[in-house]
Image 1 (cartoon, helix red, strand yellow):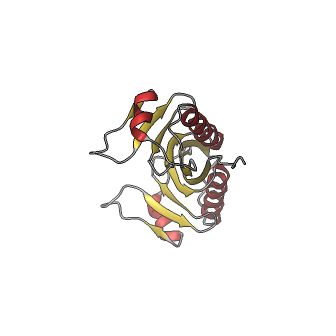
Image 2: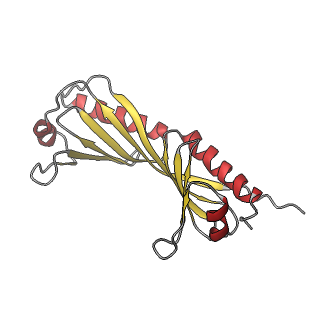
Image 3: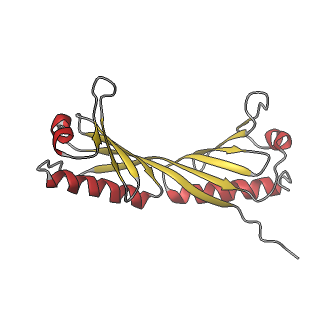
Length: 184
């Protein structure tokens, strides 16, 4: 009997940069918009948290914004759109945003245990120093991501720019570890 042991993953965080081609008055936003945090002596940006989708947006006077906490690329676009509309309600027009996904972080399971010593010897572009860190660090070239692999079969994929890259990377790693017979 063959057991389906395909790897699983879940996107934990999508970070995006947002550019507006204009200066943003953070004092005006802090004054008018509820639920904002702005203390320029502590941090140069204004923090605006929204619940649906649950994200935090860091807004800078330079016209830049960082969106973090989204669980998908789609949530990033929804969050930015929601903030643009919210600010417009208060008379603050930002114009069209230019959104760039910077990093997608996902946790995963390879559904088996990994012999990290052997994997470090057989896989290229790895670093494994168990005295320093319990996981193997694997730098994949295509897609260009870094995957932390633990002996339990758990993994963390970071550096992806598209959700599809996460799926491709996790499956590629799984197949490679099976081929090298280091995943049991």
